[in-house]
Amino acid sequence: MRPENPSNEAMPVDRHLAELKSRLIKILLIVLSGTVLAGIYSKEIFGVLAGPLVQNMPAGTGLLALSPIEGWMVYLKVSLVAALFATAPLWFYQVWAFLQPALHKKERRTVAAIVLLSSLFFVSGGVFCYLVVLPAGFKYLMDIYSDTNIMMLPHMQWYFSFLLRALLAFGAAFETPLFMILLSRLGIVSSDKMRRTRKYAIVGIFIFAAIMTPGPDVFSQIALALPLALFYEAGVVGSRLAEGKRNRTVVTERAI
Image 1 (tube, rainbow, N blue to C red):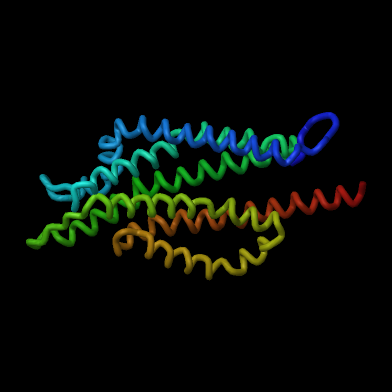
Image 2: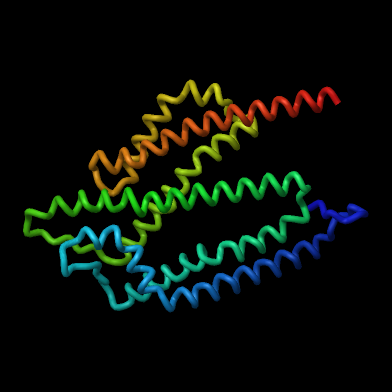
């Protein structure tokens, strides 16, 4: 790490380890405290999370608990996940406080911008999944049983695991532009190559959408594929701009 002290002396390894240990303990205490507080409202939180499925189920039905401890385990997981998200600013500050002395002023601005944008895109993907894709997909699936004597009653553990995977997948998928720009900045993939492989990327996006959406209906698949295709185009444009900035920086450094 490069501390910003006048002597520019490297911090001893034992001090690094002591600082790391202190930050990890603080993060653990933050998450544990948040888990305890979220546990008080775990039933209400799970009720909100189950909305996309329950609101499309027949009246008077709901999710099942297949064992006496299934509900308790699900509520514990809900509390932990809620705590991780709710306390993110606090535990991320601990991570930042540990890394910050090693970064120059320009690097701090770059890292802060990346973290802010990636967080915004990730949350947007999760919200889009929860508000648009899941309700449409579950409505289609439940309509299949509307004219039959079959009653679909999923259990709590299955739903929470599926929901968590879906939210994480959509959140990661919405990071596509930032990932493309990063690859371009590192010189791994150029924007020209991204443009040439656009048709393959679009096919891959629709395959990904067909796999990730809960129902086989076209609406939910397009609801995911269309934003991802737009994000891909945004990534191409952003990569081109990043390459231009990098080239100007190289020219300036050579001139100096």
